[in-house]
Length: 511
Image (cartoon, rainbow, N blue to C red; front, top):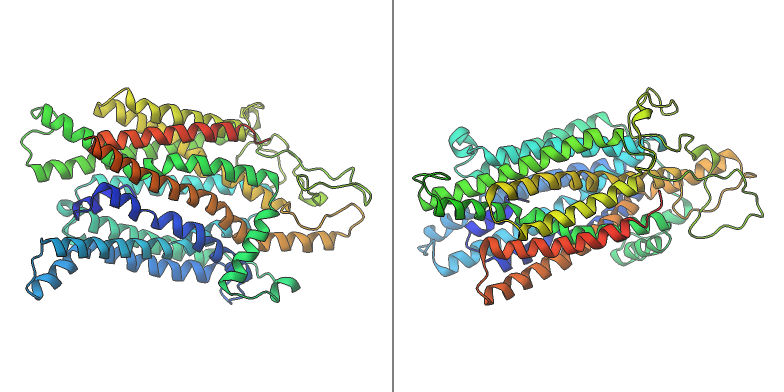
């Protein structure tokens, strides 16, 4: 994502159009991923429920990535072949349209991969391991981010010319190989448990309208905890969207400004083209610091954070005990006995963790998540206090702490809720048989893809709002003569305000 905006700028697209092009991600996330989620919940393929979507989505993603990176070359070849002006107005417009089409296709094709992998974690891990699984997934994502951003900093055309003659081509080849290899390992190792469809689900159709009717029906039945998580995500991602898509442009512009004002110290004897390439690489370097900080936070914060969810007890439930929508009942065998258990691996799911003394009782997950939003808001607003390259890079690196919790906390809470079987299913009392309770849990687990898709809607919709708002703000600031990095800075600060709203909502989540 961080390399996408500079690449589109190199194709001649203005900032406000680039912002609209990035609507592809949130729009496809808002509509495609929930649809894929409920379809995978019903899938009865011999490979499993998630693997077919993951594999075919991976193939399509690789095709779109490589095609996007070669857009300028193919466009130039065709125009030169038929006698057109390669750098003319028509060629530039066509080039931008083709690139935008590939970006939209890329964002659609990657949705099955994202939805399938997240649901695979819920399907494969028991309730007591959901938090650890989410933390591990976040750590692996952090390692991949460091690898990707580091690759963006290395001058690939000089170091590995066989990957392509541009930086973006090399990055797309590396990303394609990494995606294909990791998906192959995951699908070959993970053994999905086949789940039979419930009678009511087997009678439901597969049409788009029917599927989305079921999606919104389940949206209304989500427990309060997950609904509040989705509200937090809505405001948080209004801040993360401009950061992830424009921060390399912002840091790169600061690098160029310093290079032009102090040419003998920052970037001596560089041509304008070389200076632009160096600025993009420095922007990628700042994201390496960001990803490294996020990985360190993912590795060490779980030692100190207490259990994310209050224990759901059914010891006093009887057939006559009234239940409320906000407090669904849960079978006894689903309850966690370690109420303040830190997020660390243990020898077995039921054993207490040896490092439990490190857990801080008052530092619950929702408080940590709240603090991370406050930190994000302050750091993004602090861009108004400095226009220097190094202090801004430090601000970016510190944002990695908040990003770590964003990648971990909401999924830990939601996965635990799903695995505990508290998604508005028929109420289980002490008089019910264990086999009935387990069958009900199986019904809940079958909805994992749908729930993760609904959560992704809470992430995607605010990105649509942020993309449209960013485009409008870029256009308005351009009318006032504010362009480049200065305009991006204002967009980042608006994201900081949204982060403040997320902090207020996160504080209301009980944990």
